[in-house]
Length: 113
View 1 (cartoon, rainbow, N blue to C red):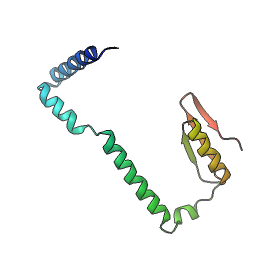
View 2 (cartoon, one colour):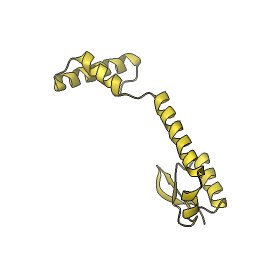
View 3 (cartoon, rainbow, N blue to C red):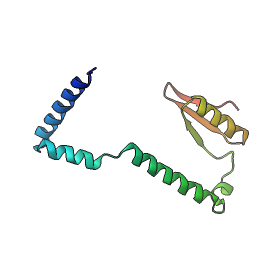
């Protein structure tokens, strides 16, 4: 693994050169296609924010989805057993929901009943 910016750049140039040879495509065209297909972090966060707003609006339009699902039957998964994940599970437990916490270091950690 390269440790300096120069070594990372040389490795990246070598990788791009090898890919262009395999695809029988000029390097500049390969780089243009990569930039067209790549989404920026800002665009991703904007899309996720819009999705959250739509989901919040849909759940508040009459509450049919919330009313039809009982709290005992709801399945809520929390990814990450850090401070935020544990706090979220604790608050949901106080509200009567059953949660399951998933952490990368442990496959399954149910929140205490």
